[in-house]
Length: 335
Length: 205
Image 1: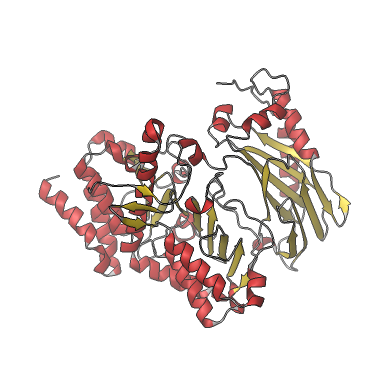
Image 2 (image 1 turned 180 degrees about the vertical axis):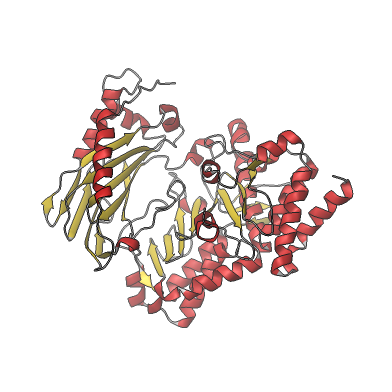
């Protein structure tokens, strides 16, 4: 691939957000093909998988890649141009705020690397994120882009304007750090909007929403594909319009990671099922304290779980985003 | 790429081991699946690195630094004894259908999970489950799986604060698919597999 074509592919990725649904798909495919063209034969054989490769599809985790090895190509093994093309493809696939969230999560892992000494250097950092492609990038046929590592797993099934982001895992440790004097909170909105919502409920509603037991971790985290639990908490039909809008805005922190057109389709689906959607909370209701919450509807499971480490659990957050009817696009693609 | 000046704002352990999660707790996560033919109980046991020595003191009974087939069997049997399922108020015997132990090295990294599947053929309308295994070092999760396609309706879920126990009412909506002969054959097959299953001892690295 010539340098001009390669740069054009990268530039295309950055323009995806302002385009029509069909041109967004075309731009993402162009970005994928540009990335693939930048690789040598050996690298391509590592990054490409069959679309129906069930083992690769579920090869993601919250844990560092040294503990749970990922397949695909590692960012640290790419040249600067290849890495730029990979990140450009990701940027084209995600919304601006979704891409920024990903960068902030990876930045947190870089902070862990810096703070972790010699062993930390081998376990954490931006170089240890992997990219893989299942199937052949196409505007017509389904294919899949995976990107992840420690505290991040994006599983994006491309099926046109309804591109599917579930299941995906976002997390943060540290959940708050500074870069050049600026505070970064990768999952700050997920925290603050949830506390705002629980405090917007009246006493009777809070009584329904708050579970009377502790939730120590994600219930439907990595390795729990295909499972759904009985919903609990307060049903959104018992919320007023303002509270429902707050819940939708909160859910948008996950649904809005993907590019705007797919996010709009997903948000419409979540809104259509709002009356059958539940909000459950476990923990204190003062922002700054560790609290677990879950949003669960017919096509949606969101979990947010501070992690106990013997230290401050608010500094280590795990979240999960699922569609029990369409994880990995199984409903949309029929695989 | 601009140079990062990292300043962590709050006191926190950032050691690599701390990132291995559930550092000083034994996470016992239980999922209960209710069907027309019986009840499935899936328990996932994940020891944090700091509590692993205490767990190994329980499992590795001869202190030889290995977890033998017999030690796996004895430990799984202990867990099965220390959980209790009641259906309509009466104890329901749980068959241990399957047990999987991770490599010991994985447990040392804080990511090894012991998985157990248990089953009873009992059916009813009120279920109570309690986990009494190693409460000194454990945190618990317990949930009932949803099965809308099977017409399962669950109500009145109640747990204790630590999630060691759960009680709920359940029923099946009229018109939903009944249990099939295939399901019974599958259960018998699982029993057979459990009987002939061979474990391999794992070395201590």
